[in-house]
Picture 1 (cartoon, one colour):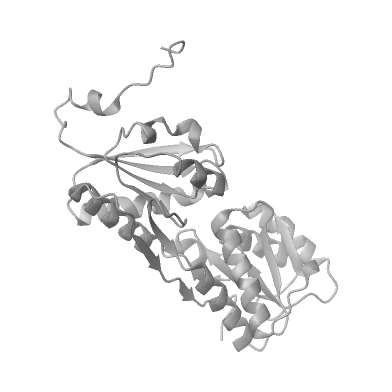
Picture 2 (cartoon, helix red, strand yellow; picture 1 turned 180 degrees about the horizontal axis):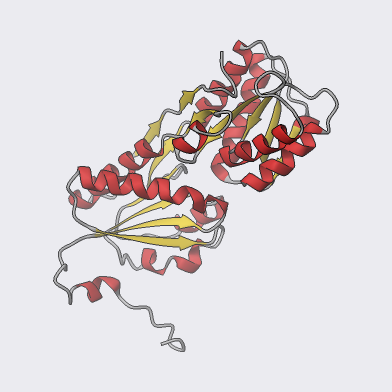
Length: 295
């Protein structure tokens, strides 16, 4: 099998079983720090499938970012009835658009002319955050972001920086601090902030994982939230995680449940109609103000 590079035909294999008429949907997600968001997306997808009473087999397919092609044989061979793909890199999207699968494909938070997409409005994310800073009277801000440029988070941070420039908020390059987009990365990057002399009091976090890590550092350094510093973060993790942090985090929430609902509905509609014409849905972000930043 290895020598001949044999790949089983999953569709043919399923015909041997009693559930031969049950459609199969695959959900692709990368193995990196974002794997901790997988549970949120998976739960939302399953919830929507149940709400629609759509009986199917849901397959989770992980892949390495920038190397989707290594796990894409099932896509190119149309082995599933429909596919939802999340968190692809620009290179992965380019590879996908070189394929012509005879099944519907929906991309989450990515742009494509060839495939259907469900995207959160990144520009609005940036402007929502910048407007909140301006409403509090801030004229300068700091940014804590990932040292790895991921498509969606990087776009939202750039949108925030652009919105700040439009609203009269100065973000000096020395106040843009980068680290791993993890809780540990937030701990380390907040330490850099604490060593600065008179840094801006308002901080925009590219990820809630980093914001959660920063709470440990600020507590250790006796930095009071929100008296000494105020935090506002993009949120991808389950809402309970940021709600019950101490102090609770104010966030621009990426509504994963709505994104998954729209993606599932787009996919099923296309599957039922055998219609592969791409459709595009935009989802609005949601502001949730708590203890770390409030008006």
